[in-house]
Image 1: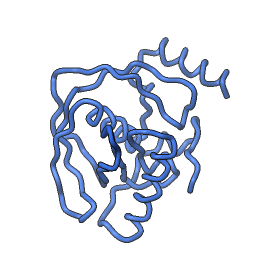
Image 2: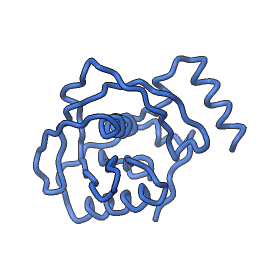
Image 3: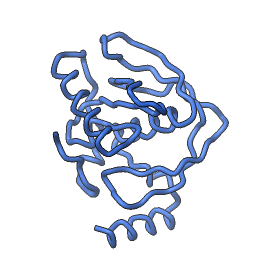
Image 4: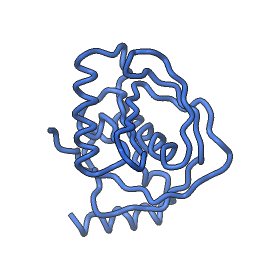
Length: 162
């Protein structure tokens, strides 16, 4: 299993390449991502966090686990105007987290595990995790959503813990 990249690895600031089709290699990457996500444990992981620069993500915000959604080329089509706060973190920057406000619900279009275009609504923690992974795939980190002062404080705390 690959290790998660650590901030400030430049690949975490690089947008992922679109996936042209779902192959056996795609499924192998997804399987590895799920294993890493479960080992953390976490509710989502983007391929870029493992240094795999493809637009792939996995999300499982279910209580019981085992409800993983595999996404390729995810894009938000619609976001609710109602916001939700959630304490977000990333294994790329261990030991710190921040309260981030995001839309409570999103409609996302993606290629699913069968290679078909799917549109799905995600709500609550599912929506937060999907948006967090899409940020990673676009070369953004959750702390980019903070104001400068809060972001600088978080990064200082992370450096002290490293």
